[in-house]
Amino acid sequence: MPSRGPTIRSQAHSTPRDRRHDHGRHYELHLQICKPQGGVIHWMLVTRHPHSQSCTRLHSTGYMGNRNLEIEYNKRFDSWSVESTHLLGEIHRDNIHTVEAEAREVPLQSCQLWACYLMLRLERRGLLAEGTFDHYMNCYEHKREENYGPGHDHHHHVCPVHGR
Image 1 (cartoon, rainbow, N blue to C red):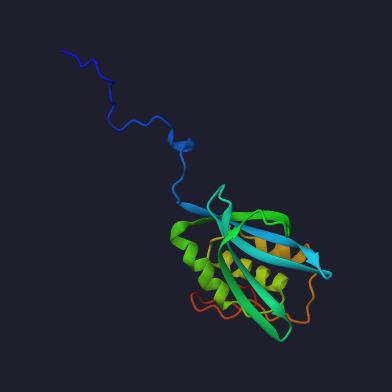
Image 2 (cartoon, rainbow, N blue to C red; image 1 turned 90 degrees about the vertical axis):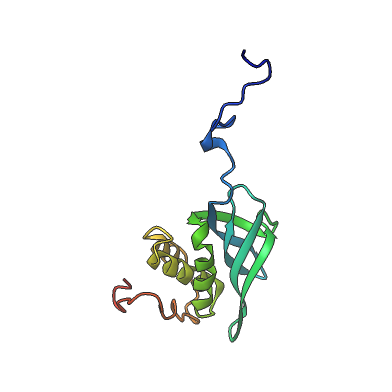
């Protein structure tokens, strides 16, 4: 005799898979450009789960001759100091620690150049689309007094001429 209670279908979901929360399978990687303070524009790369208001900021801070790498967790994504946000791509959760490891490999320099060279390192690792570095390096005017490049690549043999 059939049950009068609700029928529970095995292996079925009330919400289609493509509309369910992704449960952290990937992070978004953004470039955030902050409002000028004292005439200086600040760049930082930011990782977050899609639609989250919490993020991790990676950036070079300080001044020429006294730079620091800051990796700040649980920061507000829509901060009042952010003037514009640019989605660079998605990073699978298995590669999120690679982003931080690559950030530590970029020589400390102006925040804009540091961010661009981190993009280059992530491109070389296949984590960002080819051309991301070229776009941000060539579409903005950068102060070149502190241009120390992307740093040594310990993971792959990279041609010093072609960068691949």
